[in-house]
Length: 385
Image (cartoon, rainbow, N blue to C red):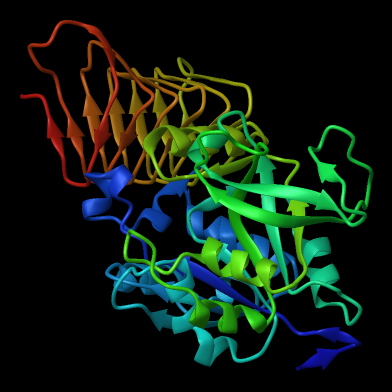
């Protein structure tokens, strides 16, 4: 056990090896953890949250997309001068618990934070980390939960207070100690509406639990089974309830929802090098990055426009993120994420609720004017000259 100022030094483990099948075709050529929210990869938000909590020794589980992940994150110094990144290759996606087992040489016997690389929260976990790393911490695991409206679609936790009373969350008292007594995956009749978020704190007994469980019907070692094993062998597994937004960015709509959350909190910032002609207009909280050009165009915030973007006779926003080096001409885009180096021109209608991969061209076609919704992979082409 490593201690500093009486607190145990925690490590972090980020799982970034998934394929992102629900975001295909975009994830056929793009690591799902690098798909941007407000022009910043989802994985970067995860790293910023971890570093802000005081953890700098970070392992990243990678798989088929390891080259892209390494190229984006590098040595991690962009997130803090003390950050150290260790890449851990998982040759097959055999479950979250298998990923933890693969990382044991890195984690050793240290307490650690585990964070799924495509999970998005906008809430500090500093206090959670402080409590779990304290010498008087009485639990072997802590699981972040979020109340949801559709518990049948998630792993759900059954909760009790320390005095054995069932806990529903209706009469929550600040600092009340709540423990998990059972986990159920996608229950037909949910015992609660507390969903497992995908962020966990573990002590070393988790490795013994993982070694004791068998693969599920999917052929994977499930982290929920390992946690349930801890519970059944008298370990204390506490719950931490997330109060702010939580989004599992596994599909297009979730990505757009996360994009909306981030954009709604941005403040107006126009780069000095941005060029805006007299016939253009910027409404609300808009970020224009370096060398962006607006010609007879409107940007309606909240929105972010990346560097070297050219807008001509265009209407952008609200809740839209355009990455760098895009060109939009005679077109309207709203509630969308557009990756870098896209060309969109002469669209007779509005593109909305769309996720558009990099280096994509959307051009005029014989389709009647209307509203268009896209999920496009990198290097796509829609329409004709």
